Amino acid sequence: MTGLPVPVPGVSVRVVKQTGCGPYAYVVVDFEPPGPGGETEFLHTVPASRLPHEFLPAVWEGIREGLDGVAASVLLTDGGFHEIDSRDEGYREAGRYAGRAALAGAGLGPPVEGWGRQVVVHYPGKPRPEPKSEPKSEREPKSEP
Image (cartoon, rainbow, N blue to C red):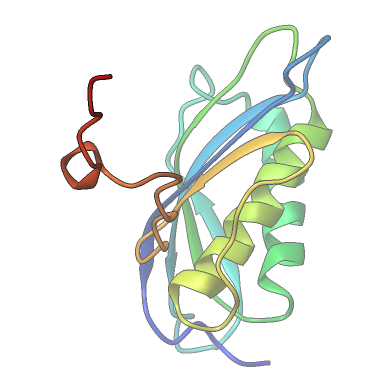
């Protein structure tokens, strides 16, 4: 098992389904290279009022899937929930995206974008999207008839 070579702090993922009820999930995670034992470890500093601890196993399962065998020290630093729309499925998905984003931020995987449900992913080094049109300053002025 390889280890994450560099820290990737501040990975945030928000999962929001646009129609119907949920799932909703929000997590902020810091990734560090693994400790001396080389094993993956998962810690959190999020109070249950911000993220009910019943969702932590789903987040962790998703992060392990997203890291795809790469070891890391993982610290969940923030989260959010919705009393009706939050469920394990959303947190598992958020965790997967967070793990993939950590790999991308460390140069071990391709850039990560959301797909399917509305998923918003931010991480250090994430490529900015290309503008869809040229800036106003570069447009030719319209001629009057």
